[in-house]
View 1: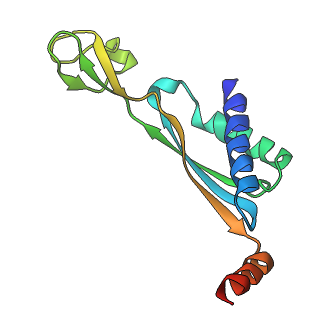
View 2 (view 1 turned 90 degrees about the vertical axis):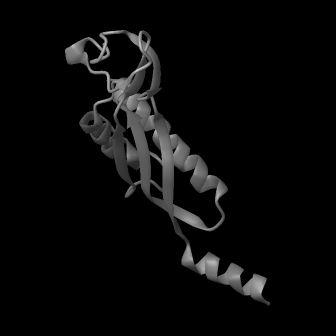
Length: 131
């Protein structure tokens, strides 16, 4: 199950962001996109994330928001843009040509990380900068 490895990588990215962001104390949410051709099961990824997040400082209550990105391709034969799928052997529905170039569908990116600030430190720092 490579979803556990992916969840670990996401949590490491979140932890790194926490450690380099002044006055942050915890991560609340991480939003990712996953391409359809990444062969990632989102339910398995969610399960792995939920079971591993407690092992990472500041991530105990972090929520994972994952969006699947459909694959888009240009065929080799006629340069038609289409959505490749397994049912049609990834062939172009117009000319039956093979995939010439995959335009999207291989993404696996962290889009946003929502952090919670430590209000006591943030307020005291605001006072220093305002003085």
